[in-house]
Structures are given as structure tokens and as C-alpha cells.
Image 1 (tube, each protein chain N blue to C red):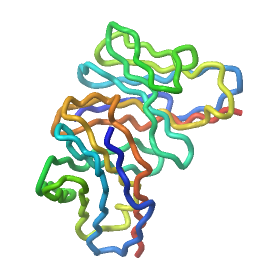
Image 2 (image 1 turned 90 degrees about the horizontal axis):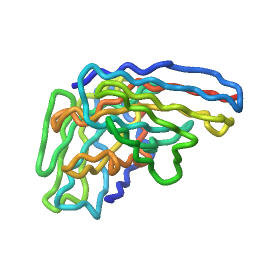
Image 3 (image 1 turned 45 degrees about the vertical axis):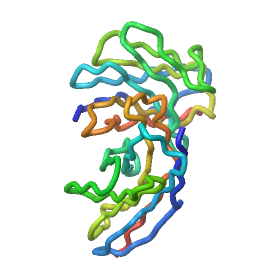
Length: 112
Length: 114
């Protein structure tokens, strides 16, 4: 199973762009990268996923270099409501949750 | 993506008792998953529940302690048995809703054992 490493915490200010980088050195060919957001007292919420290069949706962008050993979640112009824990996961394309392993996550705190 | 209703949202229980947590999904899904999130920690997968077969438990979790039912493709229950204060956690159910949406999680059940 590919293990992920990400910063424990990050602080930012409202209106700034936030980039959270995740390391997954032993990612396999059949793995894709996915990010979840969790607010206090709620379950994690899917943000974005990708296999390579760049993926963008209405919430965030995900940058994956050619070697796929890391990925960067980019949140444009964060607001106070973006304060949450962000999890990076590596998931096999087969989709078995037995291999959906959560790391420690990154606590993002957005300051006014 | 799927919508999950999880009950109860929270409970305070006496040690030695059991609590059954329910998870209802608004669509049919093959697999449902149960997680535990201890205070201030990340999520840990407890087991995978398939309809019509016994649940598959992860290392460190056993059926006697966390029996799971999966009577149909939209419903599952997790029971936390013979509870102790160490079982105080948030318990979450989850389903996979397709490649474009990843996994959907319930809002969780916050369990406090006293």
C-alpha cells in the first residue's frame, strides 16, 4: 500500500492561494490520487482526484508531476470556511476500500 | 453522489453495554465500509460489509466486538459491543459512488462511553 506524507498543519490568510503537497513515493501504476476535506463533526468529503498532470474542478486544482511521487492540492482564494483537515489518499483503480488508507491529514487554518 | 443517513448522530453509553449504529444509503451499493475516528486522529477502516456475505474485518478488529449486518444493498448496521471508555470515538460509514465522486461518508456517530 502506498503511504502518504503531508504536513501536519498549515496556516493561511483569507484570499490567499493555498498549496498542500503530499508525498507518495511508492505509488503504483494502478493507483490514483484523491483528496478529501473534513470539517469538525462531519465525515470526510471528496474534493478531487487525478492520475497524472493537472485536474481542476469548481473547488480545487490537483497538480501531479510526471513521476507521480507527489501531488499538490491547490485551493484558490481561501476563506475562513475552508478551515478543515485535508487528507491525501492513494487509491487503487480497483476501488477496494480495504486499501483506502487515511494518513494524518493536514489541518488548514485560515485566518482573517 | 450518494446520500447517507447515519443514526444516531451521538450517544453516551454505559460501559459494558452495546450500541447499534445504522447507515442508510439512497441508492444500491455493493460495498459499505465502516470506519473509526478516535479523538484528534485520522480514520481507520474497521470492516467492509458486502450484502449476502460476512463482513471482512481489518487487522485489530473482530466480529465479536464489532458485529456488522448487511441485509440489503442500501442498509448496514455496526454494533459496538461490551463497550469500554476506549471505544469512545466517531464511527462513520462510507460507500463508493463511482469514479468521479470517490467515496461518500456519513456524518458520523459520536460515541462516548462512561
